[in-house]
Length: 244
Image (cartoon, rainbow, N blue to C red; front, top):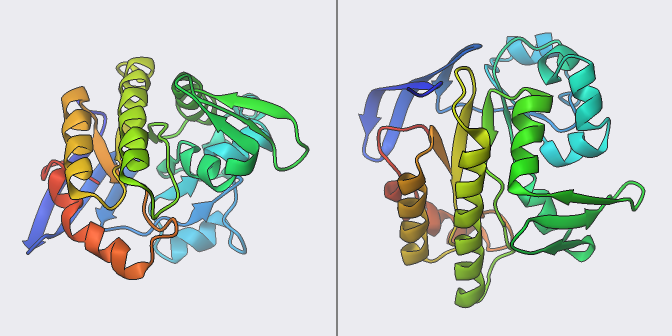
């Protein structure tokens, strides 16, 4: 039984409108998520964000684990209490920041080793650690798998290797997440601009089984037209009845 409910209320072509039900409230989809990178939406209070129509907020795992620190957030009662936000929160896994900070990061099968952009201190982020931070320390409602996000355009072999590593990490994230009654886990489709890789990624994620799915690895240097072309085929590879 998923911790996340999703009902599609209308369709037009490939577009869908629905209701996402979490333990902390409902979200009408499609939805815009204000970004609270380090536990605050820039220039807005949470009341102002809510008044503007926000039903769900996005938190950033990489930045929160460095400052103020995931364990500190947990001691303060979790990210919802820190922000004074009682609605659902989705946290990213840290994979995008790893890509954007590639000059100070190293990726291998185990995970990522990187240096903080703040003070140069060394850190590691494995699939298991990403799940621990998001689910247990921050208390996210929707947790994202750790994935390897690469800059585009990329050689086909590089895109394939990143997709395959992300799929192996997805299985480890699912095992670490286990069964939870109030939190959900999303898998992230990778594969760059290659339709066959996007299909393979989706098939592997569906085999593992997630509460929802995300289309990852776009808007990373490939240009607007190439991104839109990928978005013409990538969503169709994912389960039609699940949120994405």
